[in-house]
Image (cartoon, rainbow, N blue to C red):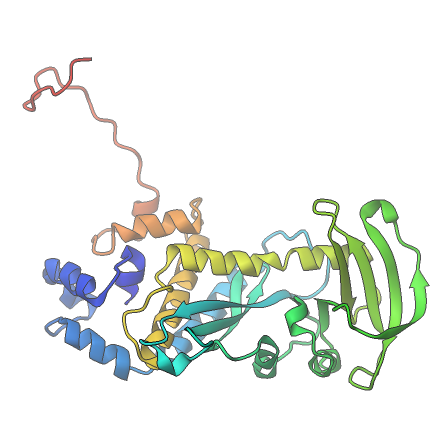
Length: 341
C-alpha cells in the first residue's frame, strides 16, 4: 500500500501488475508469497486499520522533535495547533456504511496540525455525519498550548474545558453570540483592529470572562470577530494566530493532490481507514526523511523522486544528492541523426 501511494497506482490490479513486474525484488521487501489481487483485497478487509494508526503515532513522536527548532513568525509561548476537518466524498451505493447525505456517502478527517513543521498531532477518521464539535471530545488538551479553530467548533461547554485544562484557544464568534461588554482596551485602528474587549457571555456554559477582538482584514475587507481566553498577548498576535490556521487547510490540500486518498482500493470501513492512515504514514516518513537528511527538496519533490526509485539498491542519500552527469558529445554516434539543426 505504501508502494501504491508513492507511485500513484489507481487500483489493486495496477499494484499487482507493477509489483509482479519486479518480482525478483519482492522477497527483500518482505513479500514472500504469490501476490494477487484477491490477496491484497483480503488483507485490506482483514488486517486491522489500527496497525497503521499505531505506526502513525510512532512516526508523529519521531517527526515532532525534528521540527521543534524551526523558525516561527508567531511570538507566543507553547506549541500552536490548528484544528479543522476535511470531507472525502464517497459513492453511496459502494460505501453505504458511511452514509452522509441523501445522495452520497463520505468520511471525515478531523485533524490537529502542529504549526511548527506542519506535522499532524491528532487525526480522527469518522463518517461524514459526525459534527466537527464532537471531535473535540476525543482530544486531550495540553496545558500551555494554543488551539486555533474556526467557528464550526464554537461550543462554549467544550471551550470551557480547554480553559480548565490551562490551554489557550482562538476561534471565531457567530453573529448570534450574546454577550455583555465589561471592559475595552485601546487598539491601533491603522492595523485593522476595531475593538478589543473583555465580555461576559449570556448563559452559564462559559462562566469566566472571555476576550472579544473585532478585526477588518485589509486584504479582503472582511470583518472578523475572534474569541479567546488569553487576556495578555497583543490583539495583533491573536489575528496572526488565526491567519496561520490555514496551514491545516494546506495540509489537506497537499494530501489530496499528491497522495491517493480520493478513491479507494477497498470498499469496507477497514479498507478506507487503512488507506487513509497509510497515506498519513507516507507523509510523515517523507517529513522525517527531509529533516534527517537535511534535504533541500520540497515534500512534493521528494515524493516524485521516491516514485521512480522504490526498488533501487543504493544509499538513499545518493538519490537526493546525485550530481547531474554531463554527456560528452560524440563525433561518430551509432544512432542516426533525426533532425538537422
